[in-house]
Image (cartoon, rainbow, N blue to C red):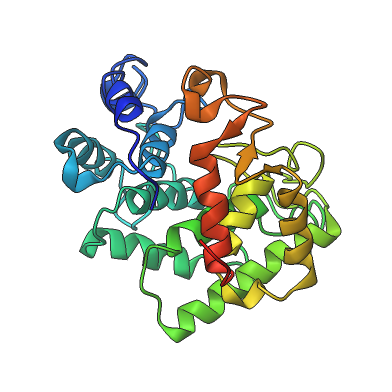
Length: 279
């Protein structure tokens, strides 16, 4: 969807050994660290810049590397241990999607794994924390749920799955209203959430609105429209002003902090397209 940013893409491809391991991974085999510039973050950001796996053999090799972290049940680990966290599985599936990688039999099984894990309140959460601490910690994780909804944007979903995804979208709108710290990781909705951040990598306002805009069930909901209005306060002309940029990305013009971002603006325009407005 985004226009190509060839110079930035080529530079990032040239930095794939920077963390000590292959394809932006760390020497200990971790693809989720360091935060902000790990394998998962970089692949997702490259997709956001317009890079496609079928146009870069280096990216295809990187995705093949990520596949080695897939577990027998369809989940993905993020290091050499057999972790089974839905947030990681969703983030990795979303990275494949951002890079326009086709959903083959293995990836479809990973999507099915997530479908089977949906929580009773409509969202997703990691089951690593002991239940019963409180109603809030027994709830789904809003951040994990957002990652899942992002990943499923790239899949053709039947009516039954779409109904389940709509429940998840409404769960996130409930969180806009309650703002409580929910789930085992206690995702709240406060001042940090309201900062506009790009590249998309965690539970923040811009990512929240962008993903939810792809779910028509929320378009007329006053809670979604309130979030959209909040995001609109960061728009200058046709571009978005970024409040938060991870230090690893600040050297790139499209990610300059406190300045209009032409790259991020393309995703503001995509929100408008999803809402039925002009491009």
